[in-house]
Image 1 (cartoon, rainbow, N blue to C red):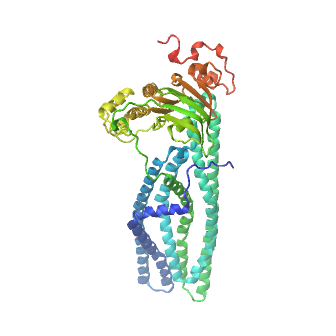
Image 2 (tube, one colour; image 1 turned 90 degrees about the vertical axis):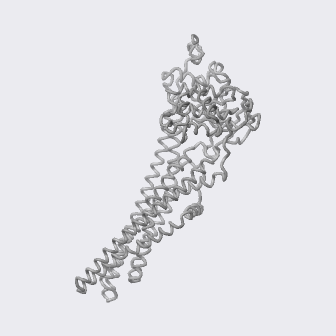
Image 3 (cartoon, helix red, strand yellow; image 1 turned 180 degrees about the vertical axis):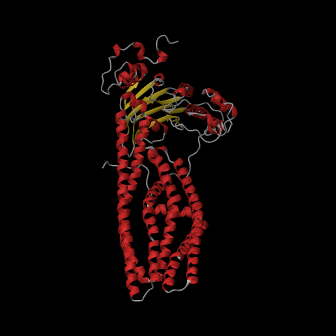
Amino acid sequence: MTEAPTPLLPIATGARVRVVITTLLRRHRGRAAATAALFLVASALGVVLPSCLGRIVDAVSNDAGIAVIAGWVVGAGAGAVGAALAMLWAARVLAGLVQDVLADLRQDVFASAMRLPVSTVDDGETADLLSRVTGDVDAVAEAGGNVVPVLLSAGFAIGVSVLALTALDPRLALAGITSVPFYLLGTRAFLRRSRVVFREVRVREAARSQAVLEAVEGIETLTALGEQDHALERVSTRAEDSIRMQVEGVRVRNRLFRWINGGELVGLGAILATGFLLHAGDAVTVGMVTTAALLFHRLFDPVGQLIFGLDDIQRAAIGLARLVGVIDLAPATPREAPVGVGDREPVVRPRVGIELRDVGYRYPTTGRGISDVTLSIAPGTTTALVGSSGSGKSTLARVIAGHHPPISGVVDMEPETTVPYYLSQELHRFRGTIADNLRLVAPAATHDQMVAALIAVGAEWAVDSLTSDDAGARIDEGRIQQLAIARALLADPAVVILDEATADVGLHHRDAVEAAIRVLRRDRTTVLIAHRLEPVSTAEQIIVFAEGRAAQRGTHRDLLATDGLYRRFWLAQTEGPQLHRSPNSQLPPKDQLPPNELLPPNEQRGTP
């Protein structure tokens, strides 16, 4: 069995989960008490039917007459109807209670996730947090909406039925107890094994999602280097690991089924045999034995629901532990909002230089990262970081941005109070108008400032609908990124970090977004990360990363003149499919290539 990746974020203990759930329930203590009372009444009314059926058997045996029998029939019907109505009422009250508690939980988890530092979350396995706020929330919501009502009903039904059976005749109740060892042994074995299995299922699902995300995000580089098969193999391996653990979960449940069925057979047989012996000694009537057998039979569904529900409870418990781990990890106070140009007096933006000396950083879980990076970025210039997925370029960008504190070396900015503005490939349009989206970084930005930012990035289309509530329906990925760049202009940072800012932008809007990025880069110290090398070619210096280290550095012309990774990347992107026949195929010598092909399109001869 392949070793599962270790989850980055912590998992709370069972005691801590119980504290959180208790705290959530205290916010709705009145409805919680009413729900318990209604389920108790419904379970008590449920005992009426088997009791009346036992009385009917005795009445028939004793020739009590039609009137007596009819009375017990009416009682049985009234008890059944009353139990059904009380159960429906209880389920309705419980549904509202569960949804409110789940809403509180989701709100607490989301608020905590938003406060988590990037360095805590981004350990090379970003799908860990993603799986918690999606899959784990779904598992808990499913358990709360579907499983909790069933289990609560089952719990009350079992308790009331056992009390009724004991009150009928303790000896018959003791006979039914013979089923308990089967239930206990089966449940113990199930809990011991399923706790491990279901936790591994969640971890492996997160690992599978991470492999898919990395393959999709790095598709251009993987295609250029002919590494698609390796990425697909990684996805396939993690998917097989996930499926294997799910199959093991099915085996665990099947073993539990055999134990439960055995307990039902032994318990019912013991009650009937004991009843036969007691009736032979005139200790009980046939009707009492019938009532006892029906009460025990009534336990079949609740006990099965309670034990089978442990499957979902285990999933929900693991999900809750992972969600509470996010809540406990988040800082108690939210981070301060950024200050934009609309929130401060006009000042001259400082020109900031960046110095990195022997900088290193490693993700604790994966061990990937960067080592011994020394780099100087002059004020107002652009430095591009290129390389294959996992080479370390994005990690270095996040270290410069302050998301990850370096574990070795020094990152210096002058002035030290500079806060870099980080713009990633993630596309987000937040709820509200376009103006609301722009004011996220500058709440006091004026209408004229927002219009100027939109025009600067080529988003004239948004000017007329700046405050329109329905404008968002017409915004696609490229325009969303234009708004993100306009936000960056309103923030007016001295240092901007662009991490694959055009990766998820469609071809239709790519030129417009790249033009907007050129505006944002103007007179700013910029760190630019891109898989496409054409925008990179205009940078003052280019750093090529491989295995967490700077393998090459220089200008576009210098790097093309040297046989190395950059030249291979460039030729793979500009020459087309004929150069990726094989990852080990030999490239033609640079002196045999047409000289014009060594330059980006905007530098080729004959271009105005």
